[in-house]
Length: 178
Image: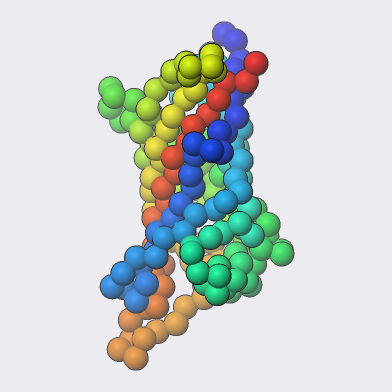
């Protein structure tokens, strides 16, 4: 079998997160700068060896004050821990439509934990310019405190200002490398 290398198309990919604020609304954010490299046997993504990284300094929520707080030592501490990293370790098919679960090592603030995400495989196509592309929707949930993102505050009524649970959503488009 031939080894196939893939690289991210950042123009058609997006890495985002959602977290409850005051437990009554949701704040969304994303990372501007991220990178994915993958290597497969032919075009079989169940064999993929991949590495995903996101630059913590590129976090963006639409509010500069909140973004500075997220980059601070209270959260990502981007000067000491400039990257988030995910390395898949196991793929399990969940049905015949290309959906599967991906388990891997997620590292945030030098804390590495095994996490699982759901993956919807969109397929492989040739674009109008002759490039081969593969698409994925990845979703899941992590507990931020598992990774040392411990900042917390309580409202007057005793509720959390920021939820511990963070929803992760990624739309990934990879391009086959020559």
